[in-house]
Length: 190
Image 1 (cartoon, rainbow, N blue to C red):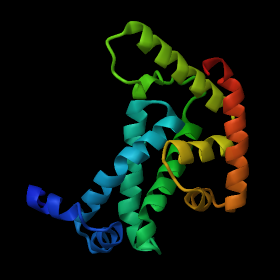
Image 2 (image 1 turned 180 degrees about the vertical axis):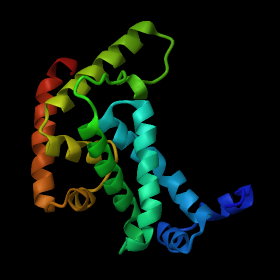
Image 3 (image 1 turned 120 degrees about the horizontal axis):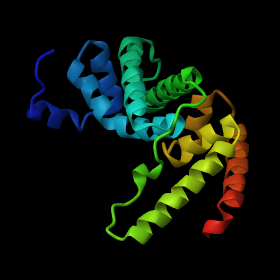
């Protein structure tokens, strides 16, 4: 693999995912690099909510991309690469959590707090995020996963159904129960 030029990176930004997959299957590392650039932020946000640690998130996402690179020729629908990558990332994150000791300490959940110079606003925002994290922790695994895919990863109901290998009607039910539970837990923050 040679260095990636700014010109080729700019050129690849306008190429559809499907075409990038087709090129990456032919060992075009630049095309795969563009897929990584496009989807890594979403994957990181999703994985972080599962593993709870920024350092571990980077490791899990990197492992997911290595797996994706190796398994890319098995992808049946190249236009569904986003959902496929999210499925790999989710599996890797859940496997990581399963291997982690129960007493592992999670990072502070304030990663998405807006930067502000007002200490009171920062403290309130951090408390809200801790409360949301606690509410998410109380959900059943399938409810939490569907909520994260919808709210953090911005997946459609059909994408969530595909990722979780369940019918879309089940996704609607899981999300409904998750939202109701979170609303009850977050009542004090309204």
